[in-house]
Length: 433
Ligand SMILES: *Cc1c(COP(=O)(O)O)cnc(C)c1O
Image (cartoon, rainbow, N blue to C red; front, side, top):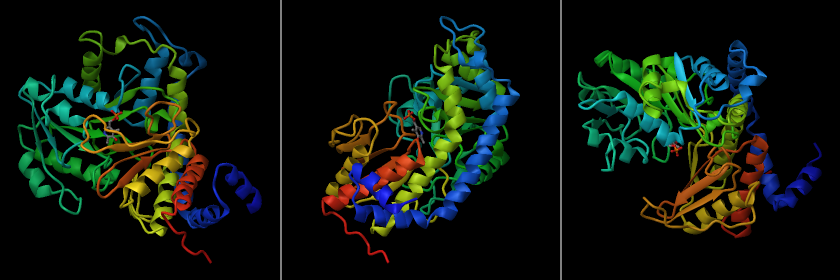
């Protein structure tokens, strides 16, 4: 396409010709990697399409129920579709599961009994699970119900410490929780095959252990999921990858039938389980979002890789780096100064489809010691499959970001972030030949 026309278009979004040219060069160097992502996305699209066809999803499935929600065909069929895509016996996919933390808490609380023990073999889990497990004392935590917790930390290089794991996983262990994505921790995200090795190791020590994987941000990044390599239960949020940007709420638990049933009994009530829970008008978005998810995830992945390469070339430390393999959609960039971090977030916000005209400000968030800045101009509040960024204002001033509903928006949004830093004289553009 005519380069001048593209630049004029970008100029309307506040992206200058110099910034556009620099970014365009970086993008041109990524075509081979993007081709592989497209192939994975095609493969996953096929998986979802086949599951929709196999389960005879019809127009009637897109309608919802009210009240008790008895005989909600669309809801039950959607759960069969999830189970087929993830190759599990069953699944629970509900708008009554309010977020990822809720889904994880539900999976844990429903499948553990007093005296049971949880082990995390991958270090401390995601922050919000601290209070669920009772690592930080909290009302209603698992600890209050007499469920104990142990962990094995990762080795300094971020790999599994099998010696330490062999010490904490015992006959007494009931459930092992494995977080796939690094979340906001400084450690690598695990590939599905690494998770498979870990599960095999754990099951060798104690074959009865329930292996649960926190699958947040990982869905459809690879051609297989943790449930393909021995996980008994995988858990995630619908305002991340599998909701495809359309689901306005929700979470899922997919896995062994007895485990999913326990979760359903806890979500609604013993005896009622999956039979109740009206889907209201939400099913069309759940189906369509899941259908779009492989492509949306691919766009988010391309955006993360593009950003890693842009900011690496601008001299910043990026994790993962520009060339390494990806197992989730999260990218971090270390800015080293508050000004640069704030400018980055301002640029992301300025490139958003919603609330682009407001400037994000750092604020004191509950649970954080330092002010946090966030950029999110999203259709679904708090959705992190949409292009969004945040970072605490403290050394080393790292921004974490993820998402973009389309690769094209991700590209323009990233360019807009570079522009912000450039306009504020916080970076110099490398010379391009
Ligand atoms: C987002 C996330 C969660 C929690 O999900 P919320 O929807 O924010 O409650 C848990 N674990 C990981 C790894 C996550 O990325």
